[in-house]
Length: 141
Image 1: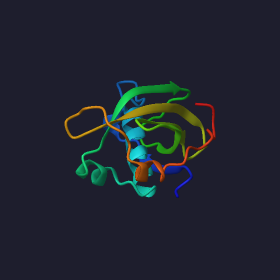
Image 2: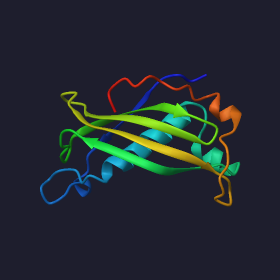
Image 3: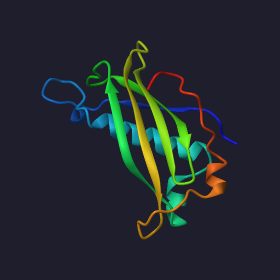
């Protein structure tokens, strides 16, 4: 059973910044998606494979708490872990930090709900839930 956190690194691209040279706020959620997809793959539940079985995990809630700004060319690390898990939902936590100085840039949460191939409410299969051990938050989210 996979029972940890994962992390991915992203180099901030110029296209992700606004007129002030700061990463536009919505890109943090894109980075969370990258980290979550990576987490699922490492936990043995490749998202593309889950979709082939008819399971979709749709975001129903997202929250980002911004602490510090990322700028063009920063190398950013996004840590991801499962915070809560039920038959129908999974909540992920995230820590986004700059690699060069370990400065916390943001924390985030997303809640996913299980849908079937017709976008109707469904459940997360037991074999998937068994691979996703809830982790005590390593940081305050």
